[in-house]
Image (tube, rainbow, N blue to C red; front, side, top):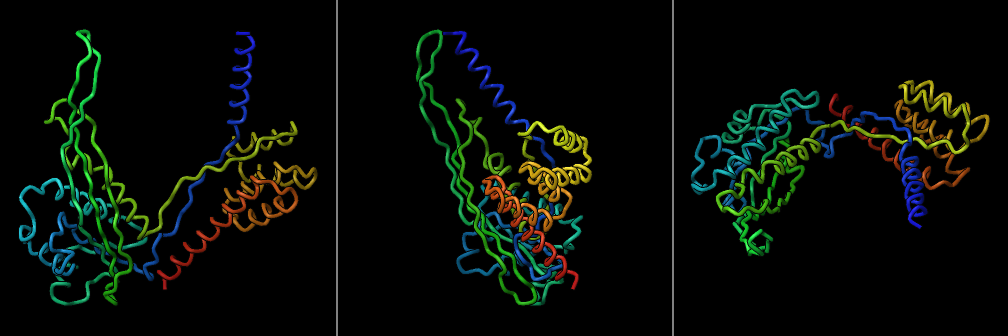
Length: 333
Protein backbone atom coordinates (compact mmCIF):
# COMPACT_ATOMS: atom_id res chain seq x y z
CA UNK A 1 0.00 0.00 0.00
CA UNK A 2 2.80 2.39 0.96
CA UNK A 3 4.63 1.55 -2.29
CA UNK A 4 1.52 2.37 -4.32
CA UNK A 5 1.12 5.73 -2.58
CA UNK A 6 4.79 6.51 -3.13
CA UNK A 7 4.57 5.65 -6.84
CA UNK A 8 1.45 7.77 -7.20
CA UNK A 9 3.22 10.74 -5.64
CA UNK A 10 6.20 10.28 -7.99
CA UNK A 11 3.93 10.11 -11.05
CA UNK A 12 2.02 13.21 -10.00
CA UNK A 13 5.25 15.12 -9.34
CA UNK A 14 6.59 14.11 -12.76
CA UNK A 15 3.35 15.17 -14.46
CA UNK A 16 3.43 18.54 -12.74
CA UNK A 17 7.07 19.09 -13.66
CA UNK A 18 6.37 18.28 -17.31
CA UNK A 19 3.37 20.60 -17.52
CA UNK A 20 5.44 23.38 -16.00
CA UNK A 21 8.21 23.13 -18.62
CA UNK A 22 6.58 25.12 -21.42
CA UNK A 23 9.07 27.21 -23.37
CA UNK A 24 8.84 30.93 -22.66
CA UNK A 25 10.04 34.10 -24.35
CA UNK A 26 10.72 37.27 -22.38
CA UNK A 27 10.11 40.61 -24.09
CA UNK A 28 10.29 44.25 -23.06
CA UNK A 29 7.02 46.06 -23.78
CA UNK A 30 6.58 49.82 -23.71
CA UNK A 31 3.27 50.91 -22.26
CA UNK A 32 1.58 54.30 -22.78
CA UNK A 33 1.17 56.73 -19.90
CA UNK A 34 -2.02 55.91 -18.06
CA UNK A 35 -3.14 59.54 -18.33
CA UNK A 36 -3.35 61.60 -21.50
CA UNK A 37 -1.62 64.89 -20.63
CA UNK A 38 -2.73 66.67 -23.79
CA UNK A 39 0.69 66.40 -25.39
CA UNK A 40 2.57 67.84 -22.40
CA UNK A 41 6.33 68.06 -22.91
CA UNK A 42 7.35 69.53 -19.55
CA UNK A 43 6.34 69.00 -15.95
CA UNK A 44 6.93 70.62 -12.59
CA UNK A 45 6.91 68.57 -9.37
CA UNK A 46 5.94 70.84 -6.49
CA UNK A 47 6.81 69.68 -2.96
CA UNK A 48 4.26 67.31 -1.48
CA UNK A 49 2.91 68.57 1.82
CA UNK A 50 3.20 66.55 5.02
CA UNK A 51 0.00 67.90 6.48
CA UNK A 52 -3.16 69.47 5.17
CA UNK A 53 -5.07 70.68 8.22
CA UNK A 54 -6.36 73.76 6.45
CA UNK A 55 -4.76 73.05 3.10
CA UNK A 56 -7.63 71.11 1.61
CA UNK A 57 -10.40 72.89 3.49
CA UNK A 58 -10.26 76.50 2.39
CA UNK A 59 -6.68 77.35 1.44
CA UNK A 60 -6.03 76.88 -2.27
CA UNK A 61 -3.27 74.60 -3.49
CA UNK A 62 -1.59 77.59 -5.10
CA UNK A 63 -1.34 79.29 -1.70
CA UNK A 64 0.16 76.17 -0.17
CA UNK A 65 2.71 75.98 -2.98
CA UNK A 66 3.69 79.59 -2.46
CA UNK A 67 3.97 79.22 1.33
CA UNK A 68 6.19 76.21 0.77
CA UNK A 69 8.29 78.16 -1.70
CA UNK A 70 8.70 81.01 0.78
CA UNK A 71 9.81 78.59 3.47
CA UNK A 72 6.84 79.26 5.75
CA UNK A 73 6.28 75.61 6.77
CA UNK A 74 5.24 75.97 10.37
CA UNK A 75 2.10 77.97 9.71
CA UNK A 76 0.27 74.68 9.41
CA UNK A 77 2.76 72.06 10.65
CA UNK A 78 2.90 70.60 14.13
CA UNK A 79 6.36 70.05 15.54
CA UNK A 80 5.94 66.25 15.79
CA UNK A 81 5.43 65.72 12.04
CA UNK A 82 9.03 64.91 11.13
CA UNK A 83 8.24 61.40 9.88
CA UNK A 84 5.53 62.76 7.60
CA UNK A 85 7.85 65.46 6.34
CA UNK A 86 10.44 62.80 5.51
CA UNK A 87 7.88 60.69 3.66
CA UNK A 88 6.58 63.54 1.51
CA UNK A 89 10.15 64.70 0.87
CA UNK A 90 10.99 61.15 -0.22
CA UNK A 91 8.02 61.14 -2.61
CA UNK A 92 8.92 64.55 -4.07
CA UNK A 93 12.60 63.76 -4.61
CA UNK A 94 11.89 60.27 -6.00
CA UNK A 95 9.60 61.74 -8.64
CA UNK A 96 12.07 64.51 -9.50
CA UNK A 97 14.97 62.05 -9.80
CA UNK A 98 12.85 59.77 -11.97
CA UNK A 99 12.11 62.60 -14.39
CA UNK A 100 15.60 64.10 -14.63
CA UNK A 101 16.61 61.76 -17.45
CA UNK A 102 13.14 61.22 -18.91
CA UNK A 103 12.98 61.00 -22.71
CA UNK A 104 9.33 62.07 -22.65
CA UNK A 105 9.07 65.02 -20.22
CA UNK A 106 11.39 67.88 -19.33
CA UNK A 107 11.54 68.55 -15.60
CA UNK A 108 11.12 72.23 -14.71
CA UNK A 109 12.62 73.53 -11.47
CA UNK A 110 9.96 73.53 -8.73
CA UNK A 111 11.02 76.94 -7.39
CA UNK A 112 10.49 78.45 -10.86
CA UNK A 113 7.00 76.96 -10.99
CA UNK A 114 6.10 78.11 -7.46
CA UNK A 115 7.42 81.60 -8.14
CA UNK A 116 5.27 81.93 -11.27
CA UNK A 117 2.19 80.80 -9.33
CA UNK A 118 2.91 83.31 -6.55
CA UNK A 119 3.04 86.10 -9.15
CA UNK A 120 -0.15 84.95 -10.85
CA UNK A 121 1.72 83.98 -13.99
CA UNK A 122 1.62 80.82 -16.07
CA UNK A 123 4.42 78.47 -14.99
CA UNK A 124 6.96 77.57 -17.65
CA UNK A 125 5.77 73.98 -17.83
CA UNK A 126 2.81 72.27 -19.45
CA UNK A 127 1.61 70.50 -16.31
CA UNK A 128 2.54 70.47 -12.66
CA UNK A 129 1.92 67.95 -9.95
CA UNK A 130 1.64 68.23 -6.19
CA UNK A 131 -0.32 66.85 -3.27
CA UNK A 132 -0.52 66.31 0.45
CA UNK A 133 -1.18 63.80 3.19
CA UNK A 134 -4.88 64.39 3.78
CA UNK A 135 -5.44 61.77 6.47
CA UNK A 136 -3.01 60.53 9.06
CA UNK A 137 -3.66 58.14 11.92
CA UNK A 138 -1.09 56.18 13.90
CA UNK A 139 -1.03 54.43 17.24
CA UNK A 140 1.01 51.92 19.21
CA UNK A 141 -1.15 48.88 19.86
CA UNK A 142 -0.52 45.84 22.06
CA UNK A 143 -1.52 42.21 21.96
CA UNK A 144 -1.02 39.46 24.54
CA UNK A 145 0.11 36.08 23.24
CA UNK A 146 0.73 32.80 25.01
CA UNK A 147 4.21 31.34 24.56
CA UNK A 148 5.87 28.08 25.64
CA UNK A 149 9.10 28.32 27.61
CA UNK A 150 11.19 25.84 29.56
CA UNK A 151 9.66 27.25 32.73
CA UNK A 152 6.16 26.73 31.38
CA UNK A 153 3.55 28.68 29.44
CA UNK A 154 3.69 32.47 29.81
CA UNK A 155 1.58 35.38 28.63
CA UNK A 156 3.75 37.89 26.72
CA UNK A 157 2.73 41.39 25.65
CA UNK A 158 3.79 42.47 22.16
CA UNK A 159 3.67 45.98 20.73
CA UNK A 160 3.14 47.11 17.15
CA UNK A 161 2.28 50.28 15.25
CA UNK A 162 -0.91 50.73 13.27
CA UNK A 163 -0.58 53.26 10.46
CA UNK A 164 -3.29 54.72 8.26
CA UNK A 165 -2.48 57.42 5.70
CA UNK A 166 -4.29 58.90 2.73
CA UNK A 167 -2.28 60.81 0.16
CA UNK A 168 -4.05 63.09 -2.31
CA UNK A 169 -2.30 64.37 -5.42
CA UNK A 170 -3.40 66.32 -8.46
CA UNK A 171 -2.05 67.10 -11.91
CA UNK A 172 -2.83 70.57 -13.26
CA UNK A 173 -2.78 71.81 -16.87
CA UNK A 174 -1.03 75.18 -16.71
CA UNK A 175 -2.57 76.43 -19.96
CA UNK A 176 -6.10 76.17 -18.60
CA UNK A 177 -5.39 75.89 -14.85
CA UNK A 178 -7.70 72.89 -14.88
CA UNK A 179 -7.08 69.74 -12.89
CA UNK A 180 -6.36 66.87 -15.29
CA UNK A 181 -6.49 64.24 -12.58
CA UNK A 182 -6.95 64.09 -8.83
CA UNK A 183 -6.45 60.86 -6.93
CA UNK A 184 -6.35 59.66 -3.35
CA UNK A 185 -4.18 56.68 -2.43
CA UNK A 186 -4.73 54.92 0.90
CA UNK A 187 -1.95 53.28 2.92
CA UNK A 188 -2.87 51.10 5.90
CA UNK A 189 -0.63 48.57 7.56
CA UNK A 190 0.59 47.13 10.86
CA UNK A 191 4.25 46.84 11.82
CA UNK A 192 5.95 43.73 13.11
CA UNK A 193 5.31 42.86 16.74
CA UNK A 194 8.03 43.54 19.34
CA UNK A 195 8.31 42.77 23.01
CA UNK A 196 9.97 46.17 23.61
CA UNK A 197 7.82 49.19 22.83
CA UNK A 198 10.89 51.23 21.86
CA UNK A 199 11.65 48.68 19.10
CA UNK A 200 8.42 49.40 17.24
CA UNK A 201 8.99 50.82 13.74
CA UNK A 202 8.63 54.54 13.13
CA UNK A 203 6.06 56.06 10.78
CA UNK A 204 8.82 56.74 8.25
CA UNK A 205 10.18 53.19 8.35
CA UNK A 206 6.69 51.80 7.80
CA UNK A 207 5.72 54.28 5.11
CA UNK A 208 8.94 54.33 3.09
CA UNK A 209 8.18 51.35 0.82
CA UNK A 210 4.51 52.29 0.20
CA UNK A 211 5.55 55.85 -0.70
CA UNK A 212 8.17 54.54 -3.13
CA UNK A 213 5.41 52.46 -4.72
CA UNK A 214 3.19 55.55 -4.91
CA UNK A 215 5.99 57.34 -6.76
CA UNK A 216 6.13 54.48 -9.27
CA UNK A 217 2.35 54.63 -9.69
CA UNK A 218 2.48 58.37 -10.42
CA UNK A 219 5.35 57.94 -12.88
CA UNK A 220 3.33 55.39 -14.82
CA UNK A 221 0.46 57.84 -15.03
CA UNK A 222 2.43 60.73 -16.48
CA UNK A 223 4.86 59.07 -18.89
CA UNK A 224 5.26 55.81 -20.84
CA UNK A 225 6.98 52.98 -19.04
CA UNK A 226 8.50 49.61 -19.83
CA UNK A 227 7.41 46.26 -18.44
CA UNK A 228 8.87 42.79 -18.82
CA UNK A 229 6.37 40.32 -20.25
CA UNK A 230 6.75 36.55 -20.40
CA UNK A 231 5.12 34.80 -23.36
CA UNK A 232 4.48 31.06 -23.00
CA UNK A 233 4.39 28.65 -25.93
CA UNK A 234 2.32 25.47 -26.06
CA UNK A 235 4.11 22.17 -25.61
CA UNK A 236 4.08 19.77 -28.56
CA UNK A 237 1.50 17.02 -28.10
CA UNK A 238 2.42 15.30 -31.36
CA UNK A 239 6.06 14.37 -30.59
CA UNK A 240 6.95 15.90 -33.93
CA UNK A 241 10.73 16.34 -34.48
CA UNK A 242 10.16 19.51 -36.48
CA UNK A 243 8.22 20.98 -33.55
CA UNK A 244 11.04 19.99 -31.21
CA UNK A 245 13.55 21.68 -33.53
CA UNK A 246 11.51 24.90 -33.62
CA UNK A 247 11.31 24.80 -29.84
CA UNK A 248 15.10 24.46 -29.60
CA UNK A 249 15.50 27.47 -31.88
CA UNK A 250 13.30 29.50 -29.50
CA UNK A 251 15.44 28.46 -26.54
CA UNK A 252 18.55 29.43 -28.51
CA UNK A 253 17.10 32.90 -29.05
CA UNK A 254 16.56 32.53 -32.79
CA UNK A 255 12.99 33.82 -32.59
CA UNK A 256 12.61 34.93 -36.21
CA UNK A 257 13.67 31.54 -37.59
CA UNK A 258 11.56 29.65 -35.03
CA UNK A 259 8.49 31.70 -35.96
CA UNK A 260 8.94 30.85 -39.63
CA UNK A 261 9.41 27.19 -38.74
CA UNK A 262 6.20 27.07 -36.69
CA UNK A 263 4.31 28.82 -39.51
CA UNK A 264 5.62 26.24 -41.98
CA UNK A 265 4.56 23.33 -39.74
CA UNK A 266 1.13 24.87 -39.22
CA UNK A 267 0.64 25.39 -42.96
CA UNK A 268 1.68 21.79 -43.81
CA UNK A 269 0.22 19.82 -40.89
CA UNK A 270 -2.34 22.09 -39.25
CA UNK A 271 -1.14 21.61 -35.68
CA UNK A 272 -2.91 23.86 -33.20
CA UNK A 273 0.30 24.21 -31.18
CA UNK A 274 2.32 25.26 -34.24
CA UNK A 275 -0.13 27.97 -35.24
CA UNK A 276 -0.50 29.21 -31.66
CA UNK A 277 3.26 29.37 -31.13
CA UNK A 278 3.79 31.15 -34.43
CA UNK A 279 1.26 33.80 -33.40
CA UNK A 280 2.95 34.26 -30.01
CA UNK A 281 6.36 34.61 -31.65
CA UNK A 282 4.93 37.20 -34.04
CA UNK A 283 3.99 39.15 -30.93
CA UNK A 284 7.53 38.75 -29.58
CA UNK A 285 8.84 40.14 -32.87
CA UNK A 286 6.54 43.17 -32.62
CA UNK A 287 4.06 42.15 -35.33
CA UNK A 288 0.88 42.51 -33.27
CA UNK A 289 -1.48 42.75 -36.23
CA UNK A 290 0.00 39.63 -37.80
CA UNK A 291 -0.22 37.83 -34.46
CA UNK A 292 -3.88 38.77 -34.09
CA UNK A 293 -4.69 37.63 -37.64
CA UNK A 294 -3.14 34.21 -37.07
CA UNK A 295 -4.54 33.75 -33.55
CA UNK A 296 -8.02 34.66 -34.82
CA UNK A 297 -7.70 31.90 -37.41
CA UNK A 298 -6.69 29.44 -34.67
CA UNK A 299 -9.73 30.44 -32.62
CA UNK A 300 -12.08 30.07 -35.59
CA UNK A 301 -10.78 26.59 -36.43
CA UNK A 302 -10.12 25.02 -33.02
CA UNK A 303 -12.27 27.06 -30.59
CA UNK A 304 -9.48 26.51 -28.08
CA UNK A 305 -9.84 28.37 -24.76
CA UNK A 306 -6.10 29.09 -24.62
CA UNK A 307 -6.18 30.67 -28.07
CA UNK A 308 -9.28 32.70 -27.19
CA UNK A 309 -7.53 34.06 -24.07
CA UNK A 310 -4.35 34.78 -26.06
CA UNK A 311 -6.36 36.62 -28.73
CA UNK A 312 -7.93 38.86 -26.08
CA UNK A 313 -4.48 39.65 -24.70
CA UNK A 314 -3.14 40.42 -28.18
CA UNK A 315 -6.02 42.81 -28.89
CA UNK A 316 -5.34 44.60 -25.60
CA UNK A 317 -1.65 44.88 -26.52
CA UNK A 318 -2.54 46.39 -29.91
CA UNK A 319 -4.85 48.94 -28.29
CA UNK A 320 -2.05 49.82 -25.85
CA UNK A 321 0.47 50.20 -28.70
CA UNK A 322 -1.89 52.51 -30.61
CA UNK A 323 -2.43 54.64 -27.52
CA UNK A 324 1.35 54.94 -27.08
CA UNK A 325 1.71 55.92 -30.75
CA UNK A 326 -0.99 58.58 -30.30
CA UNK A 327 0.69 60.01 -27.19
CA UNK A 328 4.06 60.20 -28.94
CA UNK A 329 2.52 61.81 -32.03
CA UNK A 330 0.58 64.47 -30.15
CA UNK A 331 3.69 65.28 -28.10
CA UNK A 332 5.68 65.84 -31.29
CA UNK A 333 3.00 68.11 -32.74
